Amino acid sequence: MVLWWEWIRCVPELRPACARRSTFWWMVVVLAGLSMRADLAGVSSFVRVLALKERCYRRLLYLCHTPALGLEVLLTCWTGLVLKLYTPLRVGGRLVVVGDGLKVAKEGRKMPAVKKLHQSSQNNSKAAYIFGHSLQALGLLARGPLGHLCCVPLTSRIHEGVVFSNRDRRTLLDKFAQLFVGVVSRLNAPTLLVVDAYYASRT
Image 1: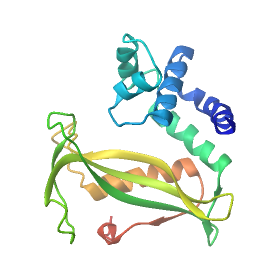
Image 2: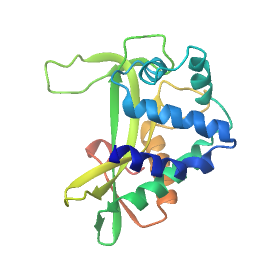
Image 3: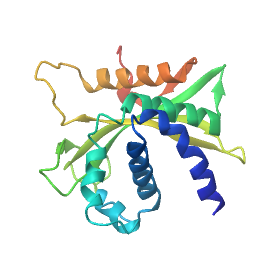
Image 4: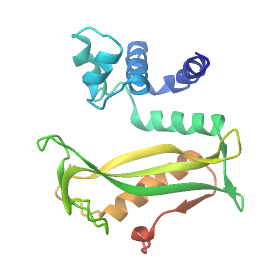
C-alpha cells in the first residue's frame, strides 16, 4: 500500500502535459493499467485488470492519438520527476545516459510499424529474422536507496517501420542522435552517453 501512496503522490507531476482534466484522468487510468497488468495484450489488458466497462476501450485507444496530451511536455515532466525522485550517477560532473536498440518480436504482421528485422547474434537459438518492432531507447543511470546502480527509462521510439515521408533520408544513427539531443535538452546538464560499438560513428 505504501508503494501506491507514493505512486499517487508522483502522478500529479505529469498533469501539465494534459490540456484538459478529463484527459489527465484517462492518462491516470492508463498508467494504473500499465502498473498492474499481468499480460501484454495492449489496451485490452488495462480493461481486464481494472475491471472497466467495454465502452472504456475506445476512450483508452483515443488517448493514444488525442492532441490534448502533449508528448513533448509529458517527456519534460517525466524527466523532471526522474531527477526529483532519483540520485543520478555523475562521472566528472556529468550525468550518465545509456542507450541501445531493441528488437521486439510481434505475432501480428499487420500491426503498425511491424516489419521483417534481421537479428545479428551468435546465439543459435535466435532466429536470423523476426517480424516485430525496432526501437531505440535511452535511460538515466541513478543510484538506488542501497547505493546500487539502476537505469531509469527516459524515452523510447520505434525508429524502423514508421514512414511519414519518403523524402526522409535519416538513418537509424541520425534518429538516435536526434533522440539523444532531445533528452539532453530536457536534462539541461552536461551529459555522457554510453552505447555499444554499433553507435560508434561520426554521427
